[in-house]
Length: 129
Image 1 (cartoon, one colour):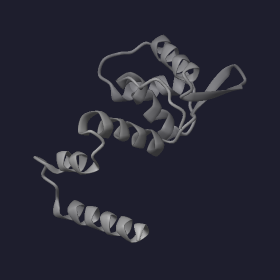
Image 2 (tube, helix red, strand yellow; image 1 turned 30 degrees about the vertical axis):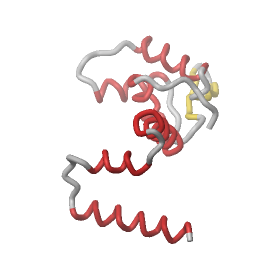
Image 3 (tube, one colour; image 1 turned 60 degrees about the vertical axis):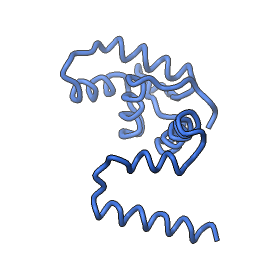
């Protein structure tokens, strides 16, 4: 994925909506955000953020009638991986072990989730051999 400016919390909220919908207009994004928030937000604020995301290369747009429809340039999994890689490098000195220890420490991991983690590690290990 090409490197883009980091996503602010507000930008990430917009990206999650677009990932969920696949493609959205500013009006659709605004409606989705209004459903998630208690405090009001102006449509114009969303429009400014969406245009900025497109300018920075996070979104592509296509025109249909009078409206622009926005979609993500990169998938959510790819962006999540890049964010985690950044945290791993900056916070944990690049150590995957330290990142995982931090995620598990002081967390009440349910037995079912721990079993899923073991299966993931086992499948990963089999792919590497």
